[in-house]
Image 1: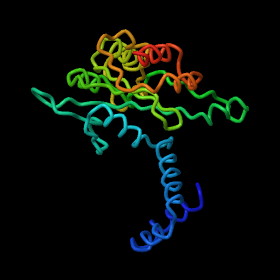
Image 2 (image 1 turned 90 degrees about the horizontal axis):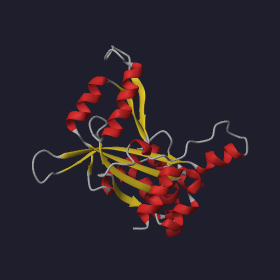
Image 3 (image 1 turned 135 degrees about the vertical axis):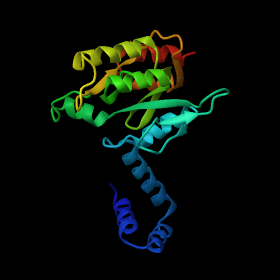
Length: 230
């Protein structure tokens, strides 16, 4: 964190609004640009919060973002009937973690972007409710905060639901049990890659994509290259 950002955060949190405004006014245009860039970089790469990545995923797909912690991540009005809901599954790959692993600083190799996501504390009741709602999944991948892809697919695609059902049957073979869950019911691109209604909403340019090849699962990479060239 640069000194200007640390200074501004301190003033914002400990002093009156006027002092905060005056501190910004006294800064040069270049200093404010650098401050904002550093703050945005920290926020979008935050490992403990995906809020900004979720917001970008939802809004780029044409949905209104839901800022509440409960419920779906977004919605949009349907031409007929109830609004269409969406669930965002953004993932961010840190190249620093990758380099730290290569240098032996970290023991585990960070997982490549695989077009996947997970549902925390999943149950049969939640699964049946999700199938009934049939919202759209928005699956996005970032590298160091830069959006690489954004894909949309209905939750009720058989490959996805089959994958989730397998995990539920393994942990909860006889149905739901109080205080027992599938902690992370996961899926990947391989579970929906053959879906006819898979919709690529955003794919980074082929030139930039090639530079990120080492951070993306090969099957997903091949799909992105193919769709991005259309």
